[in-house]
Structure formats: structure tokens, C-alpha cells
Length: 187
Image (cartoon, rainbow, N blue to C red; front, top):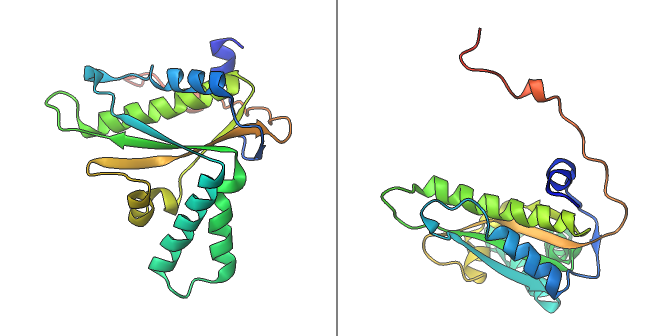
């Protein structure tokens, strides 16, 4: 698949199953991530891979987070939280680890990590894998992030769910470019 095809036609694929990406595919995913724009070559990213039984452990961590917020959380909500990480054979936690820098503001570093995550999504699509970037309450929960080992100055930007598409991915909707692009100054 050529680069423009991947850029123009990538879609989120939420229905994923085994197998997970193999070692060669994973290497390509992370190589793509590490090519993100990186002003100052700060490499403000870190990634955690979660698979196999570790997905169940993450589900328990999610349930604990819900119970910490509300000890009366219904069992149905707890079970939903426990099953969230089981929706793909591989999860990648995208972590921004920003640092003080005179020329590279924190926001720019976080954007670089977002670009790294997008690079992984594009590399997954180009290899025929399915992937979706999920955030939500669990990505921002202090208990979850402590359980994942995030330290000071680190921020969870979300979870990439990666695997084999359960069915043919949908066709990417084509937006009208003129709805989003204009010249400046306007006439």
C-alpha cells in the first residue's frame, strides 16, 4: 500500500480479533511511531504493550478505578470495564513524557506523541491490520495511570487497540475539502 492510500483511506476498526500483529508487524508499527515530528529530538513518547492475560489485569485495574470513584458501582458497569481491554489482542498505551525545554513547549511535545500514535495507526492500516485509538475516562484516571506505572510528567494519551479486523473495514468517508480549507486573508 502506498503512503497516500494509507493516509487517505485509513479508518478506525473497532471490531478486532486474533491474531495480534506478529513481531515484524510490531516493529513496523513502532518504527512508524518513532518517525513522528520531534522538535529538538526530545523523543517525548513512551509505549506500553498489553496482551494476553495482562489485558485481564488491565480490566481489573479499570474496575478498581470505578469502585474507587463510586463504591456502589453496579456489577454490570464493573463487568463492562473488565471486558474493555479484551476487545483487541494487543493494546498499546500511548504515553507523553514531556520535559521542560526552552524552545519546545509542552503542548508541542504532546502533539508529537499524538503524531507518533497516528503513525502507528497508519502503519497498522498499511499492513492490513485493524486499529482504533480509544481514550475515555480510563485513559485519564489517576488510579489507572499509577497502576500502569506512569510517573511525574507523564500523560496517558489513550490506548491503541490493534488486531485483525473481524470484517472488511468500512470505506473512509470523503469530506469536502472546501469545508475546512480557506485562504488568508479572506477576500
